Image (cartoon, rainbow, N blue to C red; front, side, top):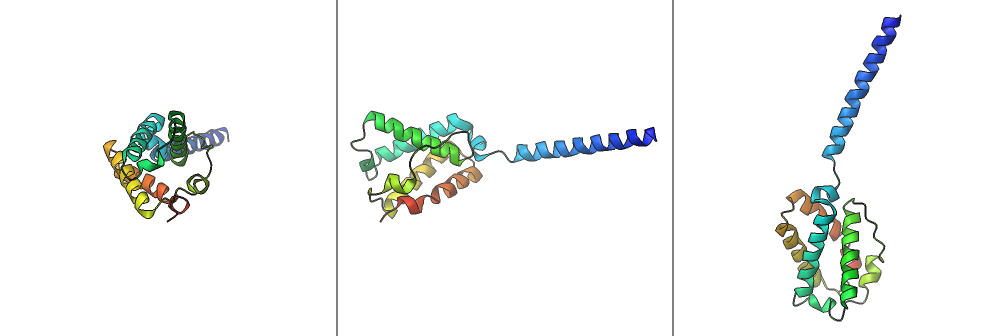
Length: 150
């Protein structure tokens, strides 16, 4: 009887180890987009490049005209926090919703397309793998209805 008890206990421990190993392997394969993109510092670099492209664009630069250096830093941090949170990172976006933030800016479909091209170029510059690039662009596209007014 004791041998049977030991055998059952060993069988249970062995099965538990297999399940734990399988679970850890699955978790390792299902890293968040945040981690697959390289974490906070990588997202900060992407944010800086992207905002720089938007501000320097002859058509989109108008959205940054008149913003103080302090306001530009706040915009940068809010974009970074939102990107971090949206990709599964530890950040918390504390800004207003996209509809409120962009209301009255008269952002057009053309403006949207230019911004998406800049984001794509930024992701290409940092060699984001195609799967991750697609996931970022898909997440961003869900915001379009709240950003584009015309």
